[in-house]
Image (cartoon, rainbow, N blue to C red; front, side):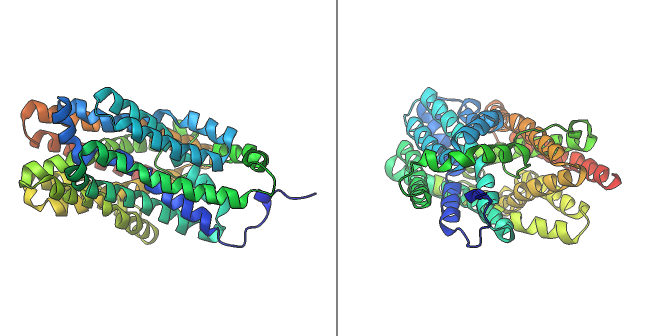
Length: 419
C-alpha cells in the first residue's frame, strides 16, 4: 500500500512553508491593532464618542470568539493550504472595505477581516504541527507567536506616521500589503508542492478530510478557541476559574491596547507619532514575555510565574494611575502581563485535563467565553472616559480587572496543585 504524502516522514525542514506561515502571521494582528494609533482621528472625523469608536476594533475581536466553527468548516472542506489563502484574501478584502471613511463600512470591514483572521488563527497551528519536524515544532510555534507580536508592534508604531503623511484611511489600507506578500509566498509553496499536471484541488483532496479531523481532535494552543470535544472539563472548577481569569485578561488587554495611544498623548502631552511609539512597547515587549514566562514555569513552581504575571497586570494600570510619566515602563510591564498570562493560563489548563477531548473542550470554553467578555473592555473604558473626561476611571477599571485576574488565577493554581 502506498503511503499518502501526509503520512511520509518529513526529514527536510520545510523552509518555504515556515516562511509563508511567519509572513502570514504578520497579517493576523496588524490590521486590527493598526486602528488604535489613529482612533482619535477616526473619532473626530466621523463624529463618534469613545465607546462607539472602540467598537471598530472590538468588532473584529468578537469574530475571534464566534466564527471558529465556521473556520473549522472552511479548513475541513478546503484543506489547510487553501484555507490559509482564504484567510489572507479575506484580510485584504476587509482592509479594503475598512478604508472607506464611514462608520458602517469600517465596522463591516473589521468584521470581514476578523472572520478571516480567525481562519488563520485556527489553521496555522495545524500546518505547523503537520509539516514541521517534531523536534522543530516548539521553535516554529514560538517564532509564529513572536511574529504575531512583531505585526502588532509595527502596526502600533508606524500607523500614526503614515496617517500624518497620507491620512488615516490610506494608513490603514497600507497594512493589506502584508497579506499580499503572504499570498505570494503561499502560492509559490502550493505551486511547487503540486503534483505535475494536477490542480490544487486534486493535490489536496486526499489530505483535506484527515486535516479536518486533526483540527477537530487536537487541542491547539492559539489565540482563539479551538473546536470543542466531549469530556469532563466543563465540570471542573479549575476550568471555570481559568475562564474567568482569561476573561479579565482579555478585557484588560483590549481596553489598554485600544486606548493606550490616546492615554499616552493626554497623560504625557506628546504628539500622535510619539504616543504610538510609546504604545508599541505594550505590543513589542510581548516577544520577550512569551519566552520568559515558559522558562519560569519550567524550572519553578507554577505559583511563581502566576504571581509574576499577576503583579504585572496590577502594575500596568496602577502605575499609569500613580506615575503616568513612566508610561513606557508600565507598557513594558504590561507586555509581560498579556504574553505571560496566556502561557500561565494554558499551562494550568493542560495540567488539569486528562484527555485530548478534555483539552479541546477546556480550551474552547476558556477562550470562547473570554473573548466574548473581552469585547466589552474597550467600549467600557471608552464610556468611562466619555463620562468623566479623563483616564483615571478607565485605568481604575483595568486595575480592577487585574485584581480579578490575580484572585481567579491564584485559585486555579491552588486547585491544579491539589488535583
